[in-house]
Length: 149
Image 1 (cartoon, rainbow, N blue to C red):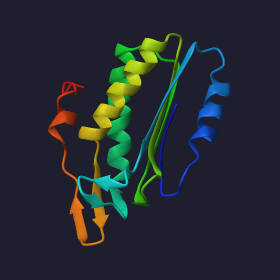
Image 2: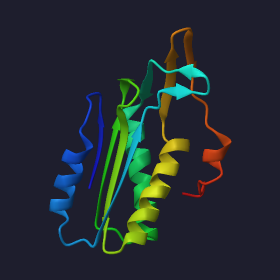
Image 3: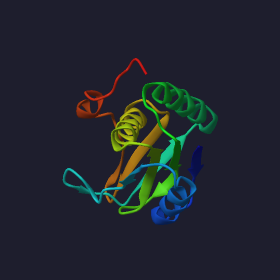
């Protein structure tokens, strides 16, 4: 059970394969990979800058994971989130969840990702050829989150 913040690129298959081997007794492995899109509306994205307060983010994510673990029976999890400059097509986040049954791992992973998108202390700035802009939460992201978590 790990939460990793890193500047460097990561190859998701390396982590997923190792996680799967480490959890060979689990019946399901869920994985989600979040990437930088090449466009935001009509603007080409050159890169995004992701900032975080690592200690606070670590505490927040552990807290939500502990709540989700009371709700869903999972065997293991891995969360990797990048910070710094990330380019289009590169991975930002990887969530991998092991459980005995698929629904538990799907729901745990989905709720964790929704929470990360809306509540975690990450700040993203999109950089374009003609300037930059801080990313605001989308109402559609807020619709799906259980704010009691």
